[in-house]
Amino acid sequence: MADTQVLVVGGGPTGLTLAIALGQKGVRCTLIEQKEAPQFLPKMERCNARTMEIYRRMGIAEKVRAVGLPAHCPMDVFIVFSLTEPPLLRHPYPSVAAAKAEIAARNDGTLPLEPYQLISQYTLEPLLKSIAEGLPSVTMRYGCALESFVQDPAGVTAHVRNGDGSPAALRAAYLVGCDGGSSTVRRQLGIRLQGEANLLQLRQALYYCEDLYKRIPIGKGRHYHVADARTTFLIVQDSTRHFSLHSVVDQDSDMATMFERTVAMPVKYDMLYVGQWKQNLLVADRFMQDRVFLAGDAVHLVIPTGGLGMNTGVGEATDLAWKLAATLAGWGGPNLLPSYETERRPVGVRNVAASTYASRGRRKWRAAYSPAMRQDTPEGLRAREAYVRIADVEQRKSNEMVGAELGYRYAGSPLVWPEEGEPPEDDFVRYRPTTWPGARLPHVWLADGTAIQDRVGDGFTLLRLGGNRVDAAPLGSAFAGLGAPFAVLDVPDAVARDLYGFDLLLLRPDLHVAWRGNSPPEEPERLARMATGH
Ligand SMILES: Cc1cc2nc3c(=O)[nH]c(=O)nc-3n(C[C@H](O)[C@H](O)[C@H](O)COP(=O)(O)OP(=O)(O)OC[C@H]3O[C@@H](n4cnc5c(N)ncnc54)[C@H](O)[C@@H]3O)c2cc1C
Image (cartoon, rainbow, N blue to C red):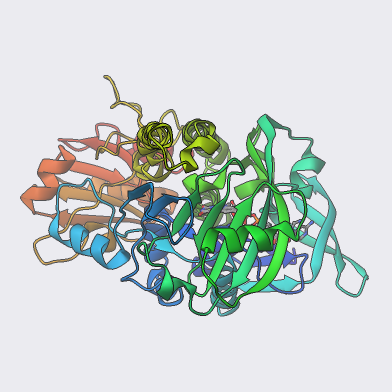
């Protein structure tokens, strides 16, 4: 017998989310991570709305919120000369509390069920690790690095090195490389990343400063972009006592000067870390080969300010988890695992395109900077006005890509019933709710105050909307014949029927629409076989 069913390589947010999702489905999985423990290094800080919906479905959203940025803190984005001068530009974005109130008050499907949550990667990783450790079918091995692997028709043998230097072999049915941008798994498969590499190299530093947040006189926010020629920006971390600063400077020690210049008031602080990172816009040619899969930064690298790095990885983890579990349980057909690449690679390409669009916007307003903007003269005023005009349009591109977060569709997937007609426009800026096959089920509140997403179970679900009672038995028997979990959910609420536009929706375990219609499917067996990858 194999040591484990699924070997997850890498304990970043993608690998940890995958381990939890697999563990919750009872899959025996082992996660190996080369580091001895999660590190206290600044990286991502925003789980987007879709990630928070996924975490809600996994039952961990409130745990994430409990250790993240307090709910009342605004998420505003500023462009400034420093934290003590009147801002050049301020884009207000709601706190979690305000966003939740807006979601509670609106029921037109345009909003997600959960708003975003600011949480530093160094807070999220230990939390996810502790949740994974509590699952009986999950084994966590930190200080264990993958060196190489071989696959055969029955499984994968991984050669690993333990923290004490001793080698070992691990046998698994499947292996998932969630091992980041320099992925050993991707390299061993010979899969290339395509796109634009090394666009810009920045330094990033992490600071602890007890009272800075309270003392910022120009308003509380999450990002303070500095109008300069060095691409400097300050990020408030989840504790509001830690800050990271990014800047193009010559040496590590310059990061102290840049922080002091940005803060522009006397504060006591500790600089905890300085490192370098590069901006890339890359996506892998392949996301899998036979029994080996790749997810997260191992297959896509974006410029992070648009928040599509870790969040795209969480999308992959949730897609792969139900497909691996179904295949291991025996009801997933031969097309199910290959559909991972068909469904998720286009999302990777789309999100790299969205990040390109956002970063070009940012480069545009940054390129309009001139030292004249600092002058207290009519010329200086004109330069500032021109700069703000560009930034007001272009900076929004980074923070207002809700279509990328909620609007991705698994069009063309072999698991999704092909519908005739013109699909809705694919737009990564705006989100327009749709039940076009392949789309995420738009959020709707029901009359009893529950959210429809919370009522849908973990298997396939036939939603009967608007009070219709068509016979679901043939479809139920078709799923039962395959051994696949299936349930019927009656939702009489008119609001859901009106928004979804159909009487019947077949939902997959990940809440994406597999099929829709106004009368029972004519070929229930064909539909069930298709949706389960047969
Ligand atoms: C400054 C900055 C800000 C960012 N902000 C955001 C944001 O707001 N939102 C967002 O979504 N994304 C953001 N990102 C991107 C985000 O940090 C990454 O997309 C995310 O870390 C990817 O997660 P991952 O689990 O796929 O990979 P990683 O986090 O890179 O994790 C990979 C793990 O694999 C381990 N590993 C590697 N090789 C091996 C091996 N051979 N054996 C065992 N273990 C191995 C590594 O040690 C590591 O722990 C930001 C990034 C940066 C740099």
